Length: 413
Image (tube, rainbow, N blue to C red):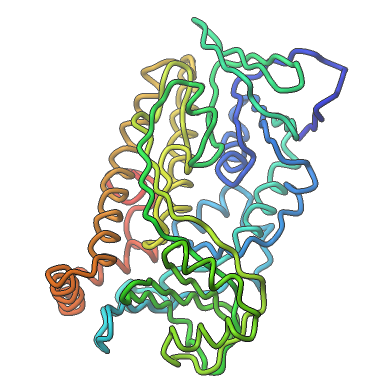
């Protein structure tokens, strides 16, 4: 990887095959996925180089399916993640309200020793950056933003904030669900503000978690426990914005007691061992995933509500689908920016992403409503899910990798 800082005067204009905005996990993974294809990639990122190489802890623990782990391994990213910081999820339980009954999805349903894995977001970011460090066909321009992107017949011309112009055959937006480039490209999106804030922090606790992930749809709040190392978990509390501000302002010892009460003593005493991070919950889906000489990947295409833990896995799937189409175009001698190439990617990602996005939103709506019909319906659905073994096995198999991973009509189609 070559590095070009904002005020490098060696070259005022650069040419590449692909320009990617956003050097987060999606953008970096795409650069890795294109390695060996002969395509030259330029990554544009507003953050400084030091923040990319040593991404700070941000409180988010990413649930990875086995197919995602396999993909990260193939991309050379997994090797840079400290294996002592990879934590297995053996089973998952979903509770509703005050009921002691739950829907349990066990690792045995999936035929594996675990359902999936948990890795901190900042470690994935660091590993993805390290994976591209040795790729000569990748260039990174840090502390830079795209001011404008003009599509021409056979190229896209990109103007950067430091008075530099780049040209490429294709531009890919990977700059978050609040993408500025998506708007500049004229691609509209639909956002849904769920009116809630997600609070996350690492927490030590008295009782063992037994590597069981818990999702609890309680009245006026949603709680989750993500099992990390022994007697340590990631606590996730989703509440209205005003309540979130009250909780954030608490001293650490008071916040720990608040967690113990909210989780009804399931893990005994609880004590935060990191700062509390707050994330407003806003889901976003782009109306189109491609346009003239442009494509969207990751959260820029679909930004999921985290309740079903599919966001990162879906974003990684978008990267692999686009990379597959681009490499196929190169092998066939076709233009990588041609609409026929990009539309194939768009069709496949729509089939995978849109049902999941809208189903997740429907689940969130049902399980956060407080009216009596909604309470009755979610109790009934959880009871049915627990009693229907084929349903539990299908969910477990999709997480643990016993269904087709990134192709066909399966999870990664």
